[in-house]
Length: 409
Image 1 (cartoon, rainbow, N blue to C red):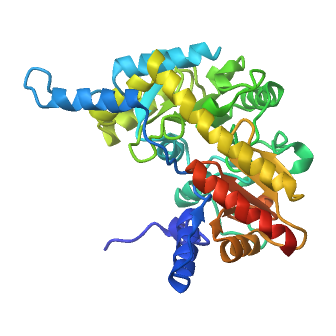
Image 2: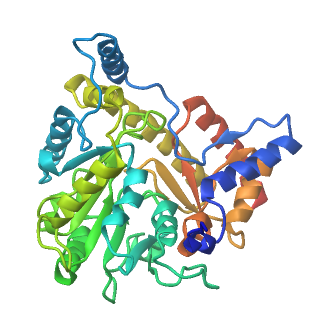
């Protein structure tokens, strides 16, 4: 008799973004003439860089010729792409080798799949608020109990990120085993300093813990004093895994391409250097046949000099959107964070209005969709996220509508 995984029943509700889509769909059905502008989900809107298009077209053409046709590739990814990613990290001053890089279909998948090489007994610490996949995937894996009346899953260690600590958590006061950190942060749009990352690296080294570091928005950092990779921190190769992707930098949200970095020096409490790297290699060889050859060619093209120029232009476009949103909110007296080195603007909701209430208010009065902070964790209550991913004309329309909210506070 087949039985189900009971851990799924511990999930308290639907995944955040489908819930936003459901509420938006219901509003649109009851208000068919409403023109809804979506600043909620972090989905790119502008065309792919020309270099990526050309790279994929060339790869497709090769698939139509017997002499250049390619079938299965290495599950770790094509060597030229892995080397180009390692070179990108070296340009940031980060210590990454080609053999550390594992190409995948995205950072979201990796951040969940990496759990499979760690025991379900591991104690997991997450930033709060956090990208939902960090929490939900650990619930599904069976590392937690039920959600309590504080909105926290029993067994997880929540690391509050608040205005008081500049939205970066304090080092855990207890021993934890896996630590999720995202910088630039989704949802708060803030970036960890070098000193803050050094503190966590030192903690992980002392406690034989492993940091899973999500740097998917690293390309949006313009402040040269801020680290783009945890491997800029000495000792990180022994205690950290990093995930990143082409999704936001090159607009590959629908194309799908990312990578995980699992250094050979990485250690765990019961695993010497090399073991975790071997385990992840075996996991990928068993579960994954590698990212699309065509898509990898597109990703490699974006890492050429021409491709980097084009992706930089794309990043600048979205960051100008972020500036427009940030200045609009500040102009009507709201407290705003982020939006300077990340494509997300994190705002404090008006006094007495919960994050979901503000979602409804923004949707009903402005026909603008954002993301309620409570959907990212208990510490997100009282905050709201707006995404800079969108057509410029829609960003301008949305901010003009939002300005009219001032009278409603």
